Length: 430
Image (cartoon, rainbow, N blue to C red; front, side, top):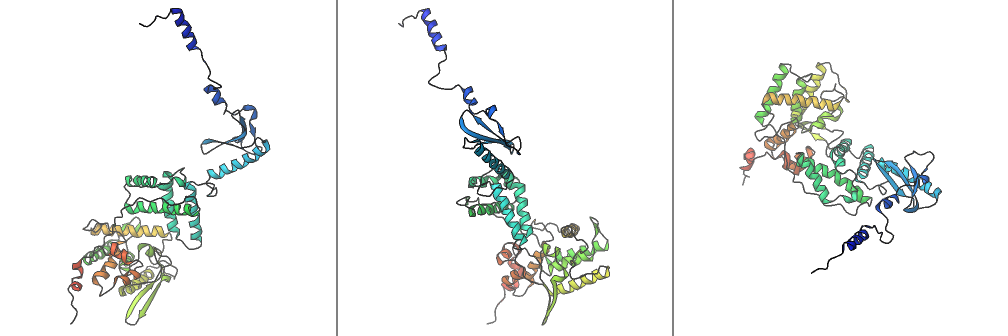
C-alpha cells in the first residue's frame, strides 16, 4: 500500500509548485518583444526627407536601424554602424534604393524580380523598333500579354524562383480561361524571351524546362469555285440594294477588294496599308502582272506577283475612284482611302465582308471552319493548287511570302487527291 501523505505536507508542496521560477537568465516573452521596439529617445529624422523615413536604435542591437514605408509595408534594415553620421548617409542611400525598387528602375543586378526583367525586355524592344529592326505591332502584342495575364500571375516573384512547376501552373490558368493552344504558346514565348534576357544578364544559370503545349492547327475556311461565284453575286446584289453596314454603304470598292485579294495572294493587313506607290504594272513578254512591294510584311518583305486578272481589277479600281470624284496620288491607299485611321478602315472592310458572308450563307464551311477576310488568301492559294498547271510548292510559297511547311499545314490542308485527279492519273509518253 502507498503511504498516506499528511495534509500539511500537501499544502507545502502546492506552494512550492505554484511559485514562478526563472531558469537561468531567460527573459519573459513580453521583455523579448520589447528588445526590438524602437527606443523613442533615439528616433532621428533626416533633414529634407519625408517623416516616414527615420533612424532609431533598439535594445537588441548596438547599431542604428533605418525604417520607411513603401509598397504598402514597413521596411527596416540595419545600418551596420554605431556612428550616427555614417548611419544617416546609409539611410539616404537606402531610401533612394527603395524608391527605385518601388518603380522598377533598379539595375537588373540589384532588382532580380521577374517584373523588372520584363520591363527591361520591353525597353530593349522599343530601341529595336526605333532602329527599324523590329515591328511595333510585335512589341504591342508582347506588352498586352504581359499586362493582361503574365505580370499579375508572376507579381513579386524573383526570376530565380521560376520553375517548370510555376510555368505549368501559369499554363493551367490560361487553359481554365478556355484560351486556345496557339495563344497559350504565345504567352509562354513571351516568358521565354524574358528568361533569356535574365540568363544573358547572369541572373539565372539556366532556363527552366517549359511545359509542352500541343499545337492544334485551325486553318480558316476557303471558297470553292461555286462558292466564290455566289460570293460575288451576293456582293453585287448588296451593291444594287445600296446596303449600309455601320454607316458605310457597300459599293463596287468591296467587290474589287474581294477579287483583288483572290488574284494577289495578299494578307488583309497588307491590303490595309497598300498604297498606289507599292504597285507596278509589268509586261514581260506574253505575261502581264502586278508587281506588289509592300513597305511592311508579316514575314519576308519580297515582291508579290499577281495573276493577270489582277491588272484588270486594279485598273477598274482606279476608274472607280476617278468616277466617284476621289482623285488619288501615289501616296493614297488603294481601298477606303478616305479613312485615314487604317485600323478603322480594316474594321470597315471586315464588317462589310461579314455582312456579305451572312447574306450568302457562307460564314461557316461544311467542315465547321469560320470564314473571314483572310479566307480570300486561302482561296487564292487553293485555286493555284487545284487549277494551276505544274506549279511547285516552293515557287508558290515564295510568292505568298510564306514557307512550304505553312502551305502544307494550313493553306493546302483541304487539298484532296480527287481535286487533282488529272495529275494523279497523268501518264508520261513512252
